[in-house]
Amino acid sequence: WKHLFKPDYKYKTVDLKVKELKNVFVNQSGLVLKNGLLVKGCAPNIDFSNYDKGFYFQHWRKATEQMLVCKYGKSLEAIKLDDNRKYLVIHSPWFSYYFWLTECLPRLLMVKEQLHKLVLLFPAGWKKFPFVNQTLEMFPQLQIYEIPFGKHLFVKNLVMPEVKPWTPMFIPEQVLEVRELFFDAIRNEEIQ
Image (cartoon, rainbow, N blue to C red; front, side):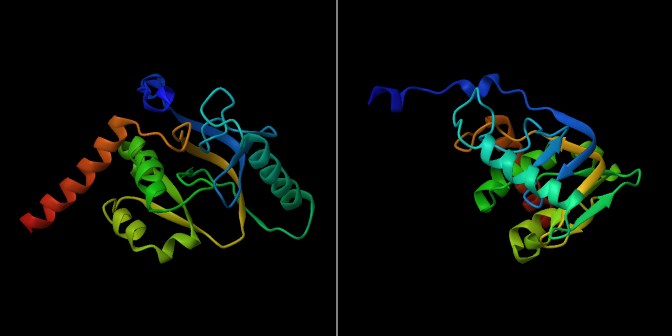
């Protein structure tokens, strides 16, 4: 059982980047396809070299089928965002309060200096979560594009902050940044 209690220092080697991508397909779950392949960092648990090696093929297959049906079929609808605005994706196939705090918000904070230039891709299902909407109110400069239920996107200009490589992982710097975001909001509310 020693291996279960051994410290895991892999997070120290994780260097998440913000990618600017051209002409990509984004499915309703936030999976991003470029040139027929999933873009590295669009979802946790898809990198073969890391913790959980089981989800790349399943996600790739689903997103590829959706892209092909949107492009050549009639049963799935897609929206083309081919204007010159830059769209931001922070969602991925898993979503809950945990993923909001450990995945979505850190991705949003990775581009906080650019938010005035970006349009957030906002899944329609997020409207029913008060914690999402209350958090996004802290970013008044952020423009939002609501993705209707069941719609997929072809995006000309996409900004994609990479997500942590695997689900049961915390990157201390990201956790502290999310913590500070909330503490600052509480302090500002007390002042008013």
